[in-house]
Image (tube, rainbow, N blue to C red; front, side, top):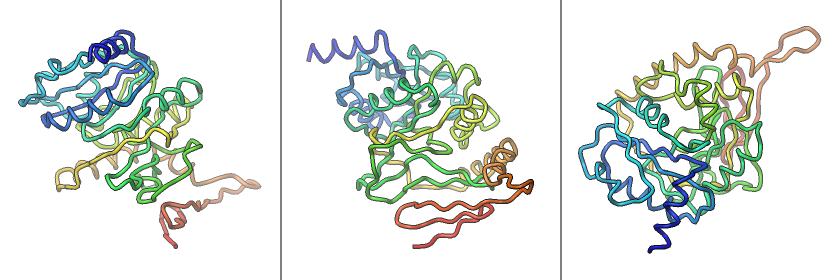
Length: 291
């Protein structure tokens, strides 16, 4: 026990990575998430910042349970985006890893992510592969279409080749790593997307198109994500609103993804890729799915 405590303190004293977990109540969920991180046999130094957004439960006492957790509180309930921005200001690590509290990390996940981004300066964002409880794939990054809608790559598939990195338009903000330097350079999440939704996709686009870096998924870094299956009308309305904002901001880039010049003519292109067990042909943003 003493050795475990010493290791936690040593890794948190000079961390390469600050793990930021935004929360609102759900103490047991958060505790399970933190336990999975501390039991993942990680070699990379890390600290855990729990970004509390107005909790009233035992979450307020988290620092009593762990030696490597800092609780950063917002003055009032501010929503996901502003809660994360507030917490990242306090990060000591050179890299930030955003993680939801409804997640359980598998062995070595953080080392795979850190080694990927730290050893290749062309990579600006690296995401973990998300798994469902039944071991099927939830996400290996995602694709954004010309109308601003998005889709998780390989969702529902049972397995993929984990020996290679997967390029993506975005990786979901519940499991992404990026440098603190790049975050500060861009000003963090764009606040036009307050309170939440599309801020993570926008960050990936900023890093890709403003900083000129890659967005990839590292499938060796695996995390179970037990996300809520509820989808209320309020969330749907916010998503639709922020999708429109995202589309307005990035419409030129989304359009240029689907055209190329050939002999002086502009031709629209279509893409064919495999998602799950289906081939998806995209023509002008319209998806046609075939077996």
